[in-house]
Length: 314
Image 1 (tube, rainbow, N blue to C red):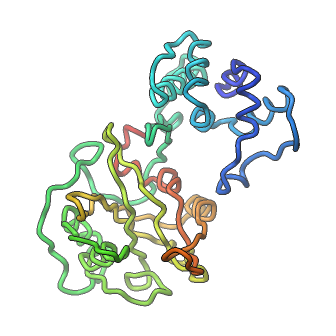
Image 2 (cartoon, rainbow, N blue to C red; image 1 turned 180 degrees about the horizontal axis):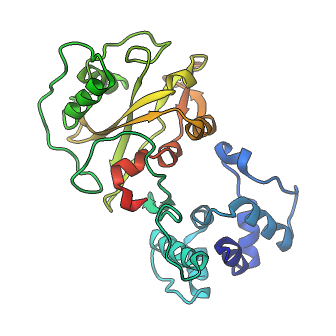
Image 3 (cartoon, rainbow, N blue to C red; image 1 turned 45 degrees about the horizontal axis):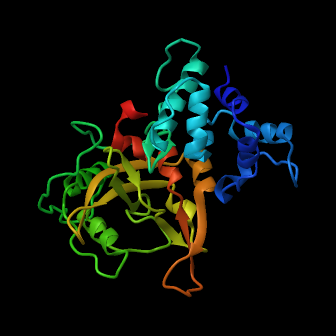
């Protein structure tokens, strides 16, 4: 049974109309089905909802308010007195069971979402290399002394070994320079600041930090869209092979590296990059400079979140 179709059929007409006219985020507008302009009747609104969220039960539940979620839970003879995150998770579980039809399937066939920021997020399985962990989600690593290589690594294995040694090293106060932590992380890997027009390590691997933080429930999430390049620079060429360094704040004003993730370009990564790469002003207020940023959703769909939260969560 199609869970989205079934749940939409249980929604009151006023909820269907409200959801049907929600603004489509710019980054996903290309994937959204076009619809008629002007007021919609219930049949038109229902068709638009199903076209937009067919196969994306998480997206439908994330768009609903707590009252709407509670009412839907009651229609399904479930408890409706929980908070929005718990209601979304419970309703997803009911919808997933409907789609399975009582048959157990592998997590890779029906990946279970986690709750980040109160919303459901599906973690894609990792597509690249990452360090092992004794448990999931990863713990904030204990502080360790810096052991940068004496010279730039000669091989990719040496670069990744340096990344292993950098996990847990405290990066110190950042000051007003937003790029200071990224430069220090690169130096821990033996990489000096080089030509901005090509990837950092020998023109082959771009090294980028991405800020992460733990939710109260323990899951890691990406805090903000990392900057990739200034507008006009070859951003796609830089992302052909990227070593992402997950950076978390620790003591006030300090940060550390939690893990790393080596992601190579393939057709799926190319699709996600083109979908989630966007430009916006970069610099102080009033600047005319613009930079290219990668939306946080990229890291869930490209596998980085699963390297922090664990494969059983995905």
